[in-house]
Image: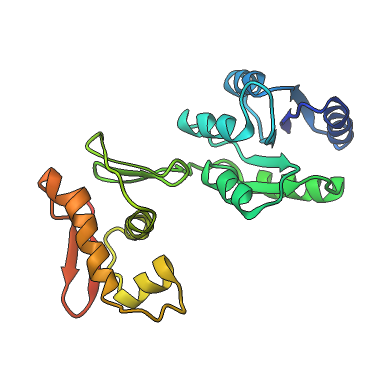
Length: 223
């Protein structure tokens, strides 16, 4: 199996190469994000170990560009950062797993084997329903190629509806997922935000895709 290690710390990169080769992997090493893209575009890999903090292009940018290229090679992020925001950003840009430094080499091997067993499958990072597109990583929303500006809550509501396009979702489901399970405010807030979404992603484009089903809930009608 072939692995691409993208790491700018020379000693760590050499250690990973030696350890992986001892386990029978064929290993290429890229010291920066630019070289990583070149290697990934020129060769087929079973998994990519991708550091977050890199020269030229950081790990987020490398991952995002590969996914934009429709390259679904499993990516395991390696980083010294351990905050929730960093993990969420890594996964939203298309990474498959996330390991913080320092890490056990045996644990790293287990994670690699797990990714290899899963294999390569198409996992688009952006959500698309007809001509409506939402990128969770960049928070960008477009309809028919036109940018639509949404607040954070409107964005969360749209993402929830898009991930369940065609399904009827209740007001309580929306409150539990877009607000939180302990929400104690007026549940009619859902109606307010659904109306706001319609005014931004439906009506300006002559659409009526966000439906209200009386007594049941709401649905984003698929094309």
